[in-house]
Image 1 (cartoon, rainbow, N blue to C red):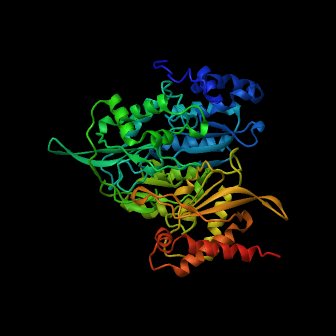
Image 2: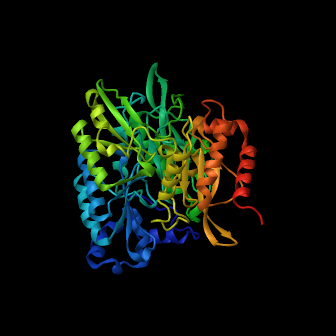
Image 3: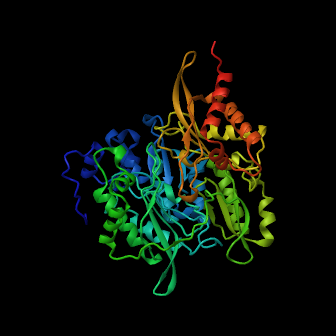
Length: 541
């Protein structure tokens, strides 16, 4: 190794850290061919966790031997061969399931160890990788899905993201981090990457340097969700485009060398930033990078949450990108093949994935837009989704995830469709559902956040249930949503939400968003409404 593990002699390292000192996580790539040849039974249980570094988790129940796999897609940008390759993997090995994640990655299910070498070979042929999609390592880099075609970007970040991503790929100098490490890089002025919830984010900025207006980035550090959510804070630094990789390396080095390794739940960068403060953190960055200018002008204008529906002109005259809703991010392999065909026939073959779990077909000529929208595949996957299904986000849930407490993916889809069938509102309402506190579905930033729990009842014993949170946003630096008191039986959740949202519709002002409404009326009024609904549904006998 090219660096010293300065934490190695810490007597309080947790068990996972002790394992990582003996074997680097990326070494699992060397072991997988043997396990594939000899079957799942040949994999010792103590090796299971290492598969995360190869983008693999065992599904629930682990003993059944089926894997979930994530594939990194930096900035969500896929060429046609890559998209068809991913569709083929879903068809041949993943029971046709193709999921888009909230980090622009692609996720498969039902894979067996015997399948993995062929999958890796297919991915390698088209320049894709699973390394770093999971594990204590740099995860897929979230970027502007419109990079290079975006009228609302300061610069094209495609090359910058690629450079940073390639540096960390299979890099054992940075494959033993205290925990997962999430990065975003974007020059879109509407915060398309949700910058405040990543460990480190590069956001668009300008600064006059030596009399010349220079385009570059500000740096936010210390964001993250899970059970202890933090909003990222901005360092007093201005970073030129050619300096992004060096600054990313410096911040990652600080996390690697000084991040906490005693308790897993305290091992994220957000805790180090919170304890050090941004001034100390900035000084540590400068020790590694050398001098950097102070902050310039933040040019961000708002937050679009990654929703880019409809046909819109690109920077390139005569070309358009078309944003489609993928209900809760789930596609079939057949649908993906059709989308690849359409993208090739009417565009340049590219498809781009959004962190809102949706997709974009770019580079469609003006005269071809209508023809694209007439394709049969775009009946379910539409540019004009209804208000609830179009703004619903969900994690994987108990269907496949060992950490989840409740079922989420299909439940969120059914609830959104139920709401759309029974209620029309003049503004979208973003609903995020998660199956556990880890919050892969980003519950904290939803207009309405739904967090799965278990609840004990008198007549049914333990049942799946949800807590309701309201008022999340990343506008103006961000604010996480607040919990309403009470637990809602999952079977009653659709009706409870319908009552709450009907009340919202009846008492809101014209054009008022759900966030504006919550800020105006406060939590108490919504709490009273929720209490009344629950009492009506569950009268005390």
